Image (cartoon, rainbow, N blue to C red; front, side, top):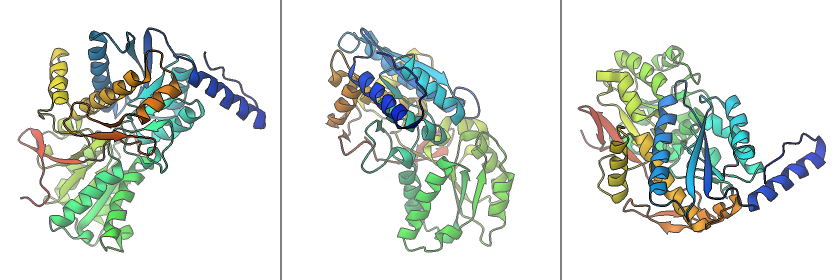
Length: 392
């Protein structure tokens, strides 16, 4: 049963939209083939992230299909490019749900794009799972029924940074922020500020905070804000994508050669390192998935799949792969003729589960974020390795 887009003004139009959404959510979406959608950045300054997540999701789906599928159904990913621009996301999401008849969306990249995607998937009763964003928008309490996350949130990442920096002996007034000037940057910034206040630093809002515009590398004005501060920072927390963050680090290191530069996971560890070259040494990135060289069954299978595809492992593709592993567990639980709402029920009923990581994740009606763990890493001798906050 396909959606029919009808433009009616007033209350009647809204009721019809809801009725159509409810009808489509209880009818089996496919037979023999389960279609899953993705609207992500495959062009623009965040393209490496979108491509990485897509690669991981596709690897898992191909692995499942090679083993006979899910209850005999093959799983197909339909991915559309939004260039990390919200105005392109909305038509992509509507097309995936209405025309391509996907059962769910998975791995969408970005907070500003999620801002426009969430109202659509809510209205159309379609799951958005494992988005590559730690936005608070996707982590409400109580949770939105049609939004389920795999990874830790940005506020958890920047909170871990602040706690770690304080343990390292860095004073609150020696911390600065550089963030993307939108909901993504705001989210990570708030996590750091709230944690500083919780640790007794009431003046956290007055710390230097430089900003830049999404999908640009115009970082000079943001750097000037930090340069104008009375205290030189010993640590700068960055909430942005890899190209502007790399541009900022290169410039800021000339002024603050001893400062520690810390990035949230969305930055994309490998593309950031490629952009920085030799200047990547000592840069910290918090990760929301385990180290790439882990020995759990899921990590071993992931590396084997990447080798078969001729691809280099990355944190983005690993996140896509692990999210897809959890997603396919939900699909299996949803039965041979899954519906959109039936899939949501199945995901909420997974409970405590280990998708091959050797650690337990949990999903329920009250818990829509499977993992809350953050792994700090630092770039050293050509790769990211575990970082100890109170170490040298």
